[in-house]
Image 1 (cartoon, one colour):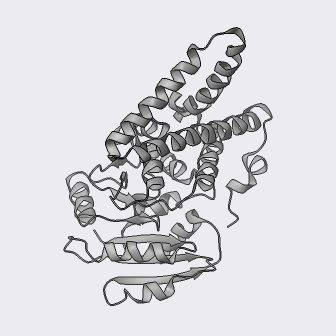
Image 2 (cartoon, rainbow, N blue to C red):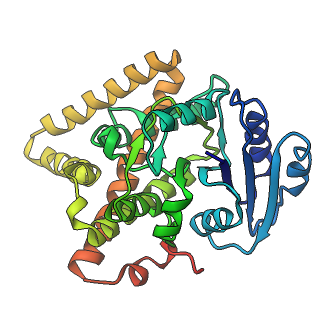
Image 3 (cartoon, rainbow, N blue to C red):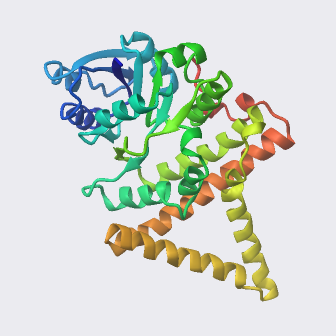
Amino acid sequence: MNFSFIIPVYNRPDEIEELLESLTKQTYKQSFSVVIVEDGSTIPCEHIVDKYKNKLSITYYLKYNSGPGDSRNFGMTQSKGDYFLILDSDCILPEQYLTEVSKSLTERYVDCFGGPDAMLPNFSAVQKAINFSMTSVLTTGGIRGASEKIEKFQPRSFNMGISKKAFEASKGFSNIHPGEDPDLSIRLWKLGFQTKLIPSAFVYHKRRIDWEKFYIQVNKFGKARPILNHWYPEYIKPTFFLPALFVLLFVVGVISLVFVFDWILKLYFAYTIVIFLVSSYQNKNIYVGYLSIIAVWKQFFGYGLGFMESFFKINILKKKPQEAFPELFFKV
């Protein structure tokens, strides 16, 4: 296979340097190419890319801002590869990444795969807390991931691969964001293509984000889900509703205090203690454990409130997704 990395970048020159440096250290013995797509950045990274032209087979394209999905599509049309590896610019690859991908696809080929994310020791405390909330089986991220079978996995666009054949048949990513990755997975299934998870093809996802941006991000995730449920009702899962139920039950628990029923809030308190203890143990740091409480509650409430707002507008008011949430759709 002729692998080609497709990496959209938006105002993140510092991130792309770390990613490119990790690409130079791959143990994979065959050649591969890299396509950098500058998505209308005001802080370009071309000078960083130039530093790696003697180390990698790399090309750089600057285009107007049209979102990550369209930028990935653009990069794939410009690439000479026959299997595209799509990464977010805030990822760092372990040395064996491409070797593991090649090994897995040789053993059982699929036209689209996804890999998990992991954490480096030098991540900040906030990054470690957010990573915990996005990956733990105690949270919505872990629950959703665990509910997907390895052979029926919906790859996430921060770490996924797709064949040229599948890209051309599906036309790639749609203009919704976030939500473009599960949308693509479902369309690929409908076209007869298979997907899978490659557990060993993990990346270090260095989310450079603060609390406000994290809340906005998960809130958008929540808004996107009812839209996807509306488009593809046959793929709805009960786990999609858990964050909304978390929020609603908490409100019921607060109201029930008027009637001296406090057992609901006691359950939430117990859950919070479990989050603190598990994260503190996993990260060997009680401060990260404390921050994980903030991250998990922001994740649940951000996603849950976004989900409920979207569900009401899409399913009750019968609004078109593009009219209800224009901020989720890039113009291409």
